[in-house]
Image 1 (cartoon, rainbow, N blue to C red):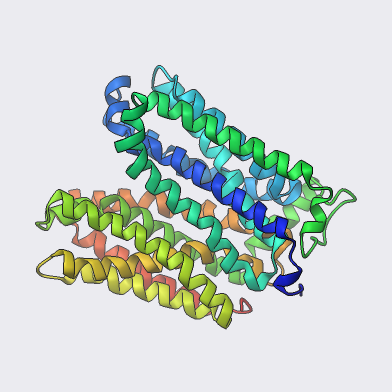
Image 2 (image 1 turned 180 degrees about the vertical axis):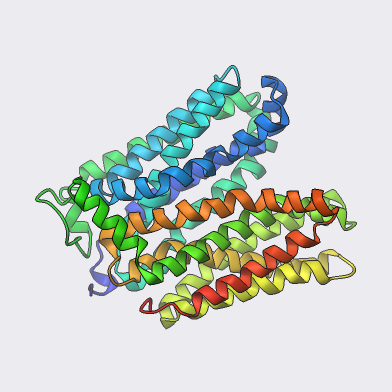
Amino acid sequence: MTGPSATIPRRSYLFLLVGTIGYGCFLFVWFSIAAFLTPITNQLGLSSTAAGLLNGAVPLMYIPFALLSGLIIDRVGSYKAIGVGLLIVGFAQFGRGFAAGFPTMLTLTLLLGLGGTGLTFGLPKLVSDLFPPEQSGSMSSVYLIGLYAGTAGAFGLGRPVLGPALGGWRPLFVLSGVVTIAVAVGWILLARLSDDIATLAPTVPEATDGAGEQAFSLSSILSDVRRVMTHRDLQLLVVVGVMYLFVTHGLQGWLTVILEGRGLTSTVASSITSGLIIAQLLGTVVLPPLADYFGKRREVIVICGLLIFAGTGGILLINRLTLATVLPTVGSVGIGIGGLATLVRSLPLNMDGIESQLAGTAVGLIFMFGEVGGFSGPFIVGFLEDLTGSFTPGLVLLSASGLVVVLAAIPLQNID
């Protein structure tokens, strides 16, 4: 057990702030492809299949590399992982600004996704290093603000404002790459200026070598894999993670089209989709801190699942869609998704046998399987629409995913 929050060095919060900025840079860079997909497709002469592959290249990289990245991060530490990850993301984005064709753009986008794993799994490790387990949800909510800010910035600022001002997507890619590299350099300098990084952490991992890093022996790696693979509560949380990403990408990718097909104008449908992202942010900053404060993390996951079930079902069942009738249902889905976004990353820090020393590996395992849901969600919704001529089957599956979250959460133990 760690001491009260008053004993946490102020520099810990500074690391969290810079990490949040870095996460925002990564998400801005990630979704800049989606934001500028039409002009990129036209200039590079891409087919729809190639454009779709570019759009899904980053999450696709998480499937084979998430667990491996987590294992490495638990050994080299969050500071190195975040710094190196940001540098890779920045240089990949810088290079994409000069890409002459599809092979180069795809290669650099895949590299970008690999660098992104350093942040996605390094930040939970950072929180576990710097803050006590009872604050894991609250502190994880902080860096996830960067997720929503970066995503919204790519669509709301990058495409309509920065792109035209800079002269197109290429100079914007170059500039955002330079900014990301600058943040990486700032992170590295901050870490080097810290006399002893280990003293910033309230807890020190038990299984370490003399340098404070776990050994890279095969037996050590296999032992960690067995521990996370056979951990009952983590297995249940993997199910929650798959459903979380299935709903997030499945609904977010198709909501505007679904609403337009139900009679709403493009402007109103786009506004409602933006409302979904705002609701996710609300769920992220409200629900996990409440779960930490009351020590009711399992119950909050159940609430998130019910919100997803009821909200998505509401979209399906409402006869006459208007802004007033859709916003509450979409808002409830977004709040549920936002709560899960933090909890699937922070809960391993509270699990016996996982905690700080296996934080990166555990979250990597969740996302290795979870991104299968993230990749398949939009595909299955679109495939079922092609098959049946309706989005109803896809919405039924998305709604049912909320019930799966509830059923997976009920048996969870020892997470409060």
